[in-house]
Image (cartoon, rainbow, N blue to C red; front, side, top):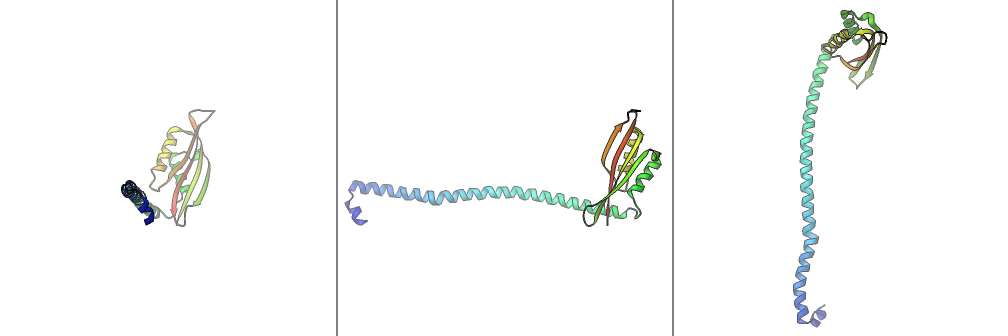
Amino acid sequence: MFEFLQRLTVREKAALIIVIPFFIVALIYSLVIVPVWEQKTRFNSMAQRKKVELVTFRELAAQFRDLENSMSGMETSIKNRATSFSILGMLEREARELGIQDRIASMKPMNSQLDQRIRESSVEIRFEKLDLNRTVEFLKKIEGSKDLVIIKRLRIKSRFDDPQLLDVTLLASTLEVQ
């Protein structure tokens, strides 16, 4: 190697002295500085994404706590409900109070287990020849009940023989804690 350098002219030696530092700087820049800079940029963008995810996670955690509190409040309301509560009996009672029990064509009770402690009790009830006012009153009574009954599905059809009367099918549902 020394022999090679001794054979070089002064001009070639000067060129090497100028070029080698630039080459070393370029090598250090491309092998060290650029990868470190890219890594830093990647880490900064990941940190920003993680901060956004953390904010989202905290919001979801707050929503979960609210839902959990709401759920425990609903469980308390359900437990405080009369032990003999039956959604089927409740719907029959409300229909009798409104004087529409003779319009009931069918009632079909259904139950499904949502999880280990909670069961959903539902009743599909079908009315025939019911006017709009009584339909609305019945729906208000059910939804406004303190027994936490909701209407999950509602189908209303006007009758061909008398368009003022309706055939109403609804699915009323409540939860029971075991």
